[in-house]
Length: 198
Image (cartoon, rainbow, N blue to C red; front, side, top):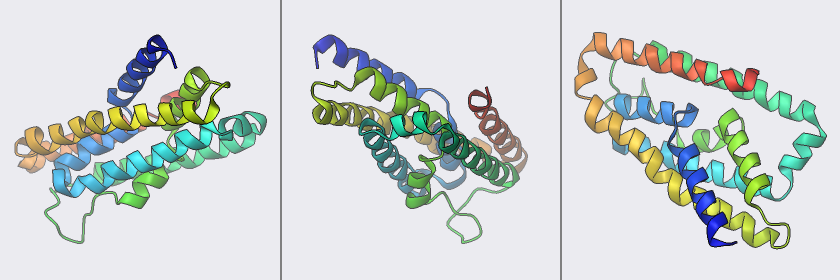
């Protein structure tokens, strides 16, 4: 992979990882509601799930979905329904989670599995592999793309979590503010479905 293509990949991975989307909105909300430490499994689950999705797309899953569009449609429907459920859960939350069983952050395996129905994750995975995987060196280039995303995504997503946990959490300890924050996050998650409906 030439230095120019590698730089382009790094810019693409950074831009798509740092911009708002379902994962970043959920991490921001989780940082506020549960704090940094309790959100770490969610962050690591995203990395593992998205990394496995990237590699699968690089080795042909994206082509399979293009050949069988009904599978892609079913994934979009499942992802949309799950995002609506998550938005509802966030929107109905009225207190900061302090470690009780009643409210728990998204767990590692749930976050990893969510990547497989996350519309933005699919767009990122398929488009990055189409643009940056080199047919002359398929295995090496697929892993370079995956590593670039994983190295850049964790600090980007960590930034959203830290912003919620360290900068907003105290201010949102006021129940009315927290209620409106969670309703806003729920609304933004629902709005994040818009690109997949087009």
